Image (cartoon, rainbow, N blue to C red; front, side, top):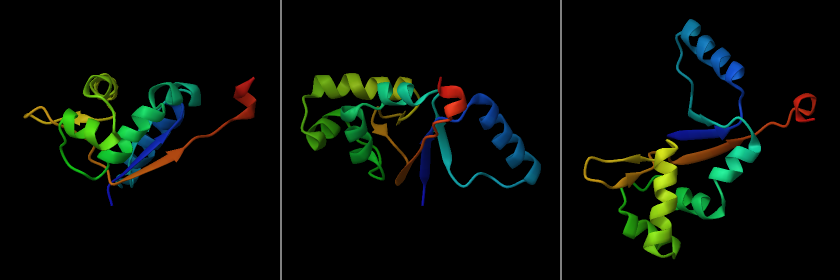
Length: 118
């Protein structure tokens, strides 16, 4: 199972996890995409972009037209959202220009630390 964990680890927490994996010699069980805040995550992963990720998960390379067809939106709007997801590093592009989200499972892992929330 190819999993992507989307969360809000701080840079320090992420560094500690990388050092721990390096020292143990064991790779992490899932790829991670972290945001500095929950708000930043929701700004990028709004409802329309989340729908795009859901239909792309585990589907292999897809053209923007096919993505638009699957989400029931116009190609122009989907193109803008896909471009933003690509530039943010959430999805990839093949040499042929198709878009790919190479994960079968998306897990959300957000933490609200009340000591830092104020």
